[in-house]
Image (cartoon, rainbow, N blue to C red; front, side, top):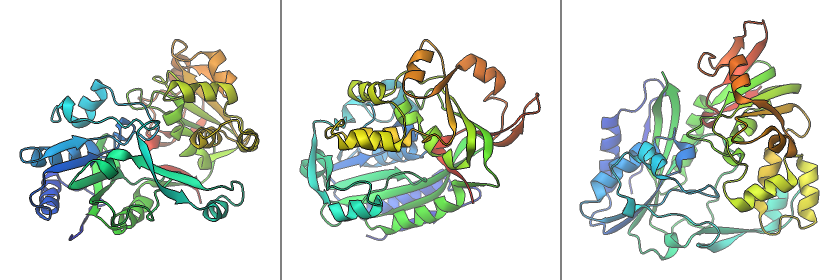
Length: 374
């Protein structure tokens, strides 16, 4: 197909340009009978994927069977409120498919041990199974549209398993917030790796925030509608950790966080082992503590400061109590008390000086970037 690349770093790409792009894309696939759209879930609500999914569903559904399967990964399924907020009322409930990551995936290959050893610096040495939802392989789809936000992240996909084997087209977005509204700055569409590479280049300019010095105190906010567990809320840690000073404080305002894991199994694992550092978790992992739940060990590692700085989770005690937060290795503060000191409604992104003269660095939306000191 003719790939389509749109970039507007300043004012953003307009809805009319988005419509034209999707028309040009679909014109290259006439006669479609069955289509699968894979957008991210609500934890990527700033991705513009909800708007794109609505546009595509409207264009495709009159003549084709269209299913929408949010890419949950290990996250919990989207509820009705999240679906409405992200996809409007455009997509009927019966069109949604749920990805049950523990029961309906199939293997498509392995990442070899030598590759894992190289990229982990020798810390991890084994093959890793690569699995996808079986509907991608056996669903009988004429076209699979993978909509994804490209933003600095701790994991990326591999090109070795799907290239040329599925009717797969990527729709990659790069977004920012402009006056509290999502601004679509990049839209790259095609079956090759090029859309991802172009999106990475733009995201590197727009989504990596270069801070001139590390903050002794960094405060970040987790939107209660977007982030309800530490499993997803810990982007407040791994997106900001490089901007926190040694011995400093990371304060996480988490009014909606009610659990550690996205399901009971992962919640129990977090409560059992806690966020207590890489070496601690690797030792447990090598002793077989996590069985085949590699992602649980990885999550616990990236949710720790490794003792370099202090992490304080500010929750409502009826959601997660002081005792629960402290049991997994964090410090705790009551959300209302913390919000009176660090009001997320009045602080602005970047450096702030509080009434008491204290200087803090504030990150309102950790999902949209990566903060680092050069």
